[in-house]
Length: 213
Image (cartoon, rainbow, N blue to C red):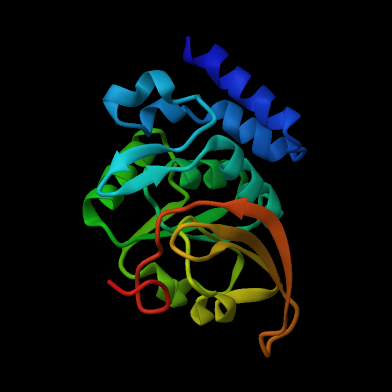
């Protein structure tokens, strides 16, 4: 049952313009229904965000695919994810990349995501509970960084922790609407190239370099 729904979801994403086969294959493989609350399982493969508790959401599948494709990952990539949430995005990243480092500020969400990801056999995902706006400097630099919550500005530590040539994908804007940005780091002194991937709406990125509590 879920397999057919997952295929239909991926087919829709493909029609909407996602071309990276690694991303599409990862989304065909990861059981999204395991990452949503039990009462929303029937809607797990709808192309829409869903609440996961604690005021957070699991992102719309198309947006997950768009952000992942923009990162340009391969089997050697080391990725930092800011905002573990349900753990679904981390699973998609783990299917493609070598290592995924994920930071979540809400302990209950981090623990639940870790339990699901471990049960599914993702041993290349490393978890931290803390302020995601500060990144995870111990394992920097990263080939790619993905931020799954909206910030009023780009957190400086994330640019610092990115490799030259690396890509940061982050929603930036007001509390109500944001623009999804793809930022490529061009030099060690922090010079960047910024591209817009379109409008979006995410929950707020809270922390020292994001929205204040």
